[in-house]
Amino acid sequence: MKSVTVGWFEIPVSNMDRAIEFYQKVFDCKLDKQDMGDFQMAWFPWDESKGGAGGSLVFHKDFYHTSKLAGTLIYFSSEDCDMELNRVKEAGGEVQIPKRMIAPDIGYMGVFLDSEGNRIAVHSSK
Image (cartoon, rainbow, N blue to C red):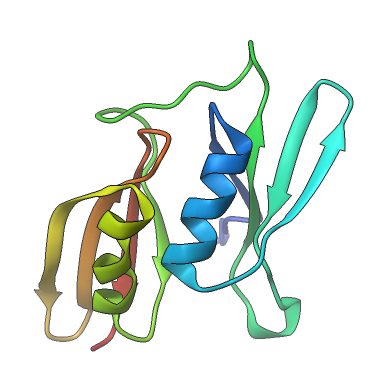
């Protein structure tokens, strides 16, 4: 069977500096911002040797738009998704689904709205 994997993701933002501050607080990491012509991007730290997909925040005034209710839902991996969910409100977001078990063999998840109005999820095994 052919395997289809995620190779890259982009999260649309309407205010890059606010979004960078939000994600740096929630995930306790540093994002690297780049201006790319009429696009602005801020890359999440990613170690290719650890697997998973890399990605970025992206701003373009005409091309990308946020959505609170529709569209693709990105799940970030976590050691314990409560860590990130507990930092969401202080960072300027809103928890929509608190940590809950999906199934014992799958783990836990939670969903939040980021500072830009995007739905984002976190997943952990504990």
